[in-house]
Image 1 (cartoon, chains in turn red, green):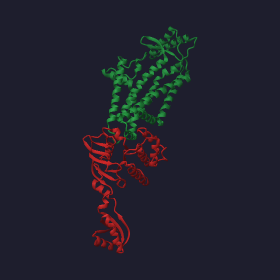
Image 2 (cartoon, rainbow over the protein chains, first blue to last red):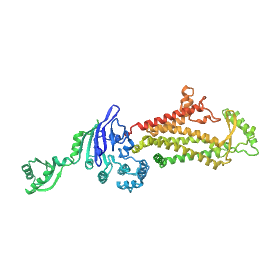
Image 3 (tube, chains in turn green, brown):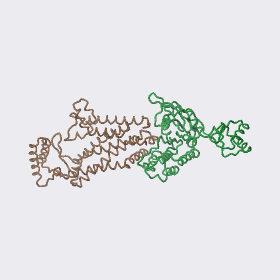
Image 4 (cartoon, chains in turn blue, red):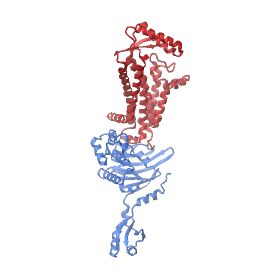
Length: 305
Length: 317
C-alpha cells in the first residue's frame, strides 16, 4: 500500500450522461514501468488527464504518494512529471528557455539540474535553438526533460516514442528503464505501439471502453506456458518423427521451418536429441508477438464505440 | 509571493520575446510621430502669440472666425466657442500660452486608445494562446493553483497596460518637445467649465485625463481577458473587444432613449466626460453612478474569468 507511487481508486468520469471512464482501480509501485494500452477512444488520455488534475474526477480518486489529486492538488502534482498528448512547447522560445520557464514554476529546480536533465536526455546540441525548428523527436525529448526537472516520483508519458527514429526509440527505452531501476520512478506509458510497450514495460493494463479489461505482467508467460518454437533443421521428416516419438510433440512444416508448441524447459532436450540423431540445426526461434495477438483478442477490432 | 513574481516574469517574458509585441510598439511610436508631424505642418493649430501684439492677433482671429461662420453655418458652434475663449483672454488680459510639448500631449491624449488596442490584443491572447499552443497542459500540472496561474496572467496584462500607456505618454512628450519645445514647466490653460472659463494647470489636466484613460484601459483589458479565459479563443476576444470599444459611443447613443441605457458599460467607461468642458454620454449621468456601474461590471468580468478557468476541464482541442 505505502509503496504504491500512484493509485487509482474506482476512478470514474461522466460527461453529460455518458460514462467515459467506468471505475478504474489499480496501483503502480515505485520503480515499475506500467504500460497503458487500448484502442482510440478507450479513455487513455481522459484517464491521464484526470491523473494530473487537468480534468475533474466524477467519482473515485487518484492518489499520488498518498496525496489525493482532488483534495491535495499541490502536494500530489509536485510528485508528477508528465507529457499529455503531444509534447507541445513554446515554439518562439529555445529549448533552454522552455525548461527555464517550467523550472520557475516549481520549487528547488536549479540551473545545474536543468543541465543535468538536458544531458541525460541528449539534447545538449539543440538546446539553444528555437523549439519551432525542432523535429518531433527533439520535441519529444524536450518534453521528457521538462517532465523530469523536479525529480518526480511518478512519470506519465503519452506516446513517448512517437516521432523518434529507431535509434531514438532505443535510447528513450533505455532512459525509461534506467529511471525506473536507478531512480525508483514509477513510469506510466500510454501507447498504441504494442511492440514498444512490450519491450519497455513490467506490466501492462489494457483499457477498452473506459474499463480495464486485463492487467498482465510482461515476460511472465514464457517460463511456464507452452510457446511456439521454430527450428530450421534438415532432414525435416526425420526431425518431425523424432519429435513425435521422443517427446509426443505435434509439429508442422512452416516456411521451411519445423514449428511446434512446447515449454521453454523442454527446448534443450529437444535440440540435444535432434543433434544426437544426426539432424543439422541451423537456428531455433521462439515465436514472439504473443502480446499483440492477445491484445487483438481482447480488443477485437480497433473500433470506437 | 516570490513564486508569483516568477510566474509574472514568465508571462512578461513570453510577451516580449515575440516580435509581434515589438511591432505593436513600433506602430504606436509611428502614430505618435505622425500626429506630431501633422500638428507641426498645420500652422493654424499652434498659432504663436507675440509678446507685443497678441491682443491684435486674437481680435483678428475672431473677426476671421466670424466671417467663416457667416459662410459655413456648420462651423458656428465650434467657432463661437473659440471666439468666447479668445474674448476671455482679452477680458482678463491673459496672454495665450504658446504651443509646447505639454499642449501636444494634452491635445493628443486620445492616442492612448491605441494603447487600449494593444492591451486588448495582449489580454485576448494571454490565456487563449496557451490553449492554442497546447502549452496550457504543461502549465497547469505544476504545484500552483489555477487561480495563481490566472492571477499572474491578469497582473501581467495590467502591468502591460500601465507601462505601455506610460511609454506612449512619455513618447508624446518627447516628440512634442522636439517639434514644439518644452516651454514653461508649469503651463496653464483656459478651459470652459460649468460656470464659464477658468485657468487650470495643464500638467494636472494631462494627468487627470491620463487617469481616466487608465480606467477605460483596465475595463477593456479585463473584458478581453474574460473572453479569453472563458472562450479560450483569442480572435473572438480581440474582435468583440475592439468592436465594442470602437462602437461604444454609437451603441450608447443608439439606445440612449431606453430606460436601461444607463446600465450599458460604455456609457460609463469614459470618466473624462465629467471633466470641465466635456459632454456627458447620457444626460443624467453622475460620476458616482458611473463608478458603481464600472465596479459591478468589473466584478462580473473577474468572477466569470475565475470560475470558468478554475473549474472547467482541459480537454483536447
